[in-house]
Image 1 (spheres, rainbow, N blue to C red):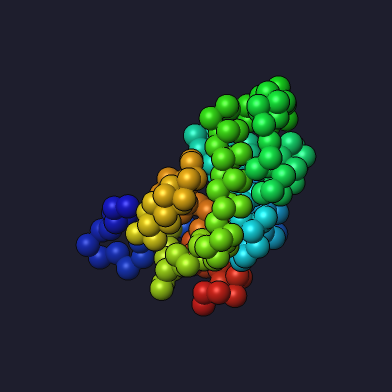
Image 2: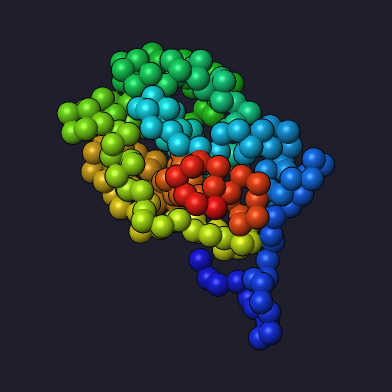
Length: 211
């Protein structure tokens, strides 16, 4: 991402900084996109997820989000959980063409054949990865040495060398819909990096990175 524009005498980066909700707390602006998004930001986003099922769910939802807004996916999350056996990798790995047709007829989720079949394939790849330490160990092995410290939205990266390497490794293991940008979003969501804006009341909340 290019550097935000600065005037010669500026001491603060130009761009969109923290936004304040009705409760007066500073947040990264996207968190003010409604109560659902605010609760997700305040309670879940960026908190560490280290278990296989939790990471498989988030990887799957990030894949479905590709090309769509996160709010659309979040609003349908409970439907996704019911449709995909609460993202139990063993159960999803056993899905067959009958399940694919069932999912394509389910108006409660995103009815995209490629993403549905990729999720099933990714479940099978997740099961296979257990022989090499497992999905959680693999994903967390790409935690970077440092995290971004964005002061404005324009400084938040959308990919990183680690997300590129993680995407490449997952593809080699048979995963699909795991591009570098999607994997960076996953890394943000599960705590591998902290991209809360500096000044947000959630900055450093994961306990992994100092604020």
